[in-house]
Length: 482
Ligand SMILES: [Zn+2]
Ligand SMILES: [Zn+2]
Image (cartoon, rainbow, N blue to C red; front, side, top):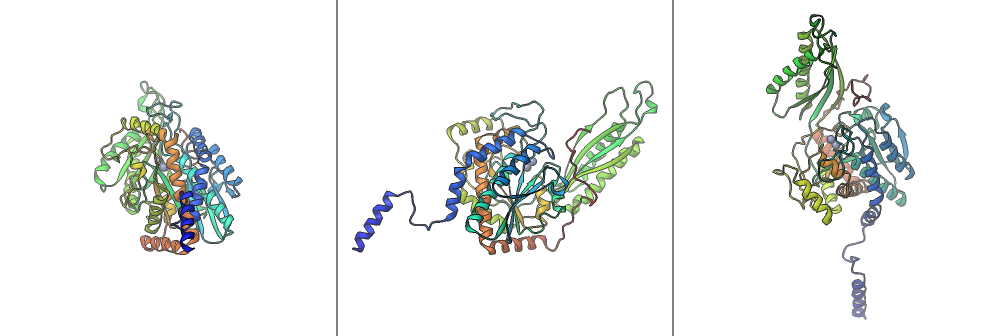
């Protein structure tokens, strides 16, 4: 009789061979399936934000789209966070733990691009999503909404938040959001970033100070009365000469770069106004403070040597990222569960054509998008205002392969990928990994504790203090031309 029952069960198992009887039913698989069923909807949202392509602090349509989505899903929305019209916090639930997920949605100037594997602007000179923040914002909102549905269904205590964070590209909104105190009661904050590979990280990023130096001189006819003029452009050039020489005498990992955002209007008028926009970066905030003090002296030298006046407008000052070992392990595990992505024949051909336009010496091969890379402990080459959050609350980010292997951030190639199906598939990997990690943290207090222990160990008693003066307002017009 027993044997008969067993063979009956075997027949049933064969009939339903797609159902595994070996592993116990896991509700997370059900959540992942539900997410797959909504891929089209969230993919469309990411495409709309890609088309809006709004630069820092101008992301009106992009933030409205995400707010509407979250509001309709049952989140309550706190608007105008930190006196920033496009910053918001969407919350659902009550009590501990409080899990935050960061979302970004700003585009980059001048990177407009069609979703084709050749350089072709949609609108010449217009902004584009070269950092994939259209995917960043939507994946994070998608994860938050799925977690909210899970909390509601389970009637669990715990809070899930989506942080709508504008102007990551140099505008530093999270610094002002942090100043408004919106991260203070969080237990952990989760984030990700579009990338050309899937992988968690325990690496840091570069601290970054960014400012505009404005020089004021005296206008005069450049031929008829040059002796009456005092050139603000000369001041900028003298400053850049000093900065270029300074570059040789700073620690190896330091990066200094600038653009001249205003150099006068006509050669026959001595410019009475000129402006330079400059960044300095370093893995250590303390070292960067010293380098920055010397850059300020270069600016003063420019003004002194040309008999002009200089004013500094600090745009942003972000820390280096404080890595979190426990959260990196959690991401690594969940990235493997979410899995990499598989290209269709059409996507593979897109990727092959795109890769012909790229230097590939240090790039992973095609096919690596299906894998998850080992946890990377290297120094990130960029900077992010996520770093300021990471010194306040245990925070970590991972990468998802939204871009063809070898495609760098801030390029026409990454812009193209961010607007088509490869970007959207990578976005699904990110949304699933965020969702799984948030559910793990909400259901296992030990994981929240481990993230806190990693945070305390890495922070080693250091108290975060923003480098932005308390009186400074968010630079809402930093993308405007002077
Ligand atoms: Zn970027
Ligand atoms: Zn970015």
